[in-house]
Amino acid sequence: MPIPNSDTGEADVIKNEAADHSSMPERRSGFRGWLDGVRSTRAGALTLKIVVGVIGTLMVVGGLIMVPFPGPGWLVVFAGLAVLATEFHWAHKVLEFGKQTLHAWTEWYKRQGWTVRIIVLIVTVAAAAVIVYFGLLTLGIDVIEIAQRFI
Image 1 (cartoon, rainbow, N blue to C red):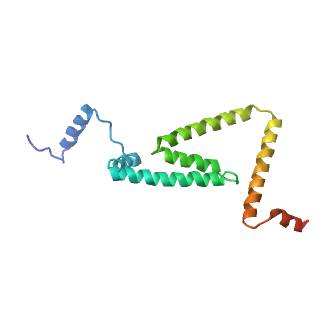
Image 2 (cartoon, helix red, strand yellow; image 1 turned 120 degrees about the vertical axis):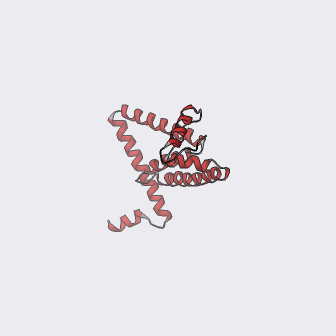
Image 3 (cartoon, rainbow, N blue to C red; image 1 turned 90 degrees about the vertical axis):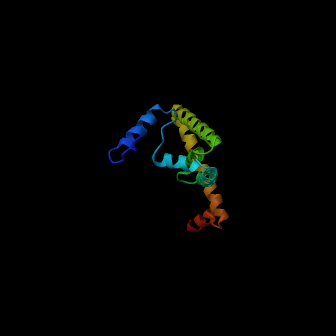
């Protein structure tokens, strides 16, 4: 059998014909293909799990710390869960539960009248103020004392 000439593309034709008859899934390219390559060895799969676990956990913990403060606390929590869900099935389940709960809360909130919305707003602002006050107090900053000096 003659050796296929790579200049004429005969080897590519033979590979493509073999791939058409194969039962194996198509090889992915880009970032997912790179991840598949890393996961193809035991050491790579374990290293990837550890790295994803550490990064995702740091994001979730950081997001939970940010939740009471103004900013993207819950967004960071969900992003951390999404990172963890790339390697851990339990994180995918927690992420789906969180998305369903958030959606249910949002739909409930939309159905409420202005009175309930204002009460929820007041409770949220009061809780955030208490958390910020005690957070600053742990740093040795008494906001009430500073405010009294100006009065």
